[in-house]
Amino acid sequence: MIALIDYGAGNLTSVRKGFAAAAADLFTPRDPSELSTATGIVVPGVGNFGATAALEGSWLEAIRRRVDMGTPLLGICLGMQWLYEGSDEAPVVPGLGAIAGRCSRLPRHAGLKVPHVGWNSLHAAQPSRLLAGVVEGTQVYFTHSYAAPITPEAAATCEHGAVFAAAVEIGHIFGVQFHPEKSSDAGIRILRNFVAAAKG
Image (cartoon, rainbow, N blue to C red; front, side, top):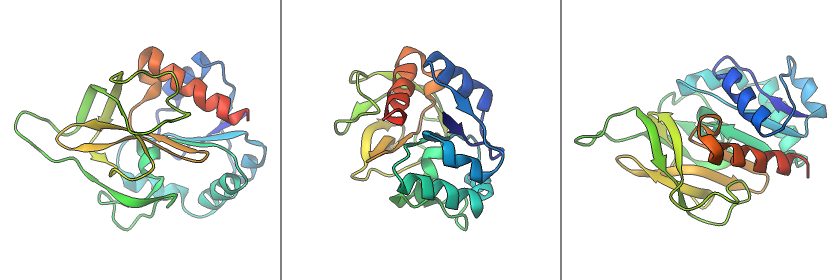
């Protein structure tokens, strides 16, 4: 089963509904030791990067241990930003560090509001297992003020004042800045792709 991490910053109800539509079973571990049975791990999240401080210590160690063993990991929105080394939003809080770089605030340009809320287009940056079957220009749902830089791990990009990484993929580590559970059929396809990766 796939573990859905509850660290007090995620809309777990909508994520659960999204995975239910993708025909996946989730459980929410109460202790890091329960990750030993997980076939996949999902770190959701909305709000300030500082909330990810709750993952420091035993949770981070347990997640890193499972990922090192080959367990697929998916970060959603704030969870994707956590895959990086950190964020300017909460400079003293470290991320997982699976991807080099830091997240920064989206720039304010005339006519563009921050936070970036609503539907926007995905543009493929490289072939991706997570985005398999998602066509170029597909619209997905975003809500965020900070974003990840374009790095070699970027699987898709989006633009709102600046071009940023909308999805990342490195081996069995995946991340999406948007909310697949709120992104209609394309989002469910993405969740199904992760489920398939978790099944091996």
